Image (tube, rainbow, N blue to C red; front, side):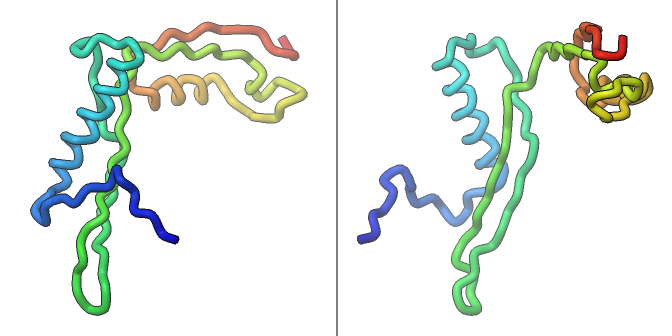
Length: 121
């Protein structure tokens, strides 16, 4: 027997990607506040969005809009052990000093880097 999910509700045909953004961010904020965050103490950001048309036969039957968002981190702490450095004999991850710098740039946030030891140091 097929049961209909009671949390699914019908939405307007005019529901847009911007409407989905607003709803996703509001739900994320509610979840963050429920877990102890102050409501005005954080920013959110959309990481990814996808939109697909649903087709039945030769006709459009609706849209599937998916949005992935997150609380934007204020600070990222990178505990940079040297295990992934190219000189480490065990891990073979081949990171260089330039690789660590590029990783820091990719994170695009305020970042604290803590340099730790490794097996070859």
